[in-house]
Image (cartoon, rainbow over all chains, first blue to last red; front, side, top):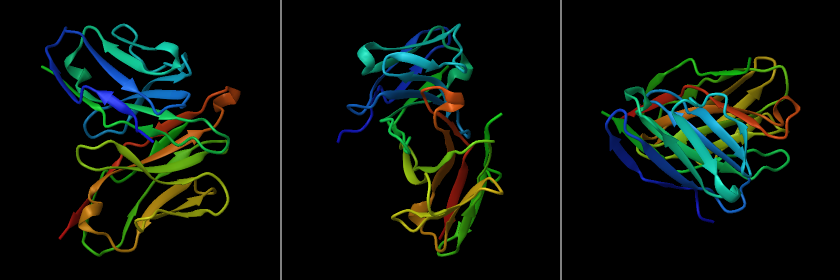
Length: 115
Length: 118
């Protein structure tokens, strides 16, 4: 089966600019996650969707970050305006929620550099 | 509060030597446990998982991890490492139906960088 697709792979922007990332999860996966991975740290959950509804966005900086998942399939994550500290890899993951199994499959990520 | 700890940020080890990467978590309820591996410039890949049953789980490339409920640990081990095992390793914990909601909560540890020295 096809994996989680993310684009772009790399993005360099100036601070205060806006940027958007796209994710297409594995077909049939109801749960979609966006993680932020700062260099040297573990992935931090930004937002979690169950189908097209948000179930957890407690760590999303809502003054500048937004995300949507249209029709419960692909998703976009936007940052506006970007700050230097937003430089990180943004990972998208999806899972097919089943009893006794919550394995998440990850895309290759988008590496964002804010200068 | 739920948390995942990986005490060793960097582990250098000589090729063919054994290695153990430590993972501890805090939780008052049952959890699922995972180890993910991230090779340079690649996404995270699932290495192995514990859901239930035998507390010792194995991966196809020689890694194993043992769930210890009393010590709330899920340490990763390999008896003989190879150069190709050089990567970042992340322990992750999942709380199914988090706080009686309809979704699962997953938290990652900060990661351990394994460097295999020829």
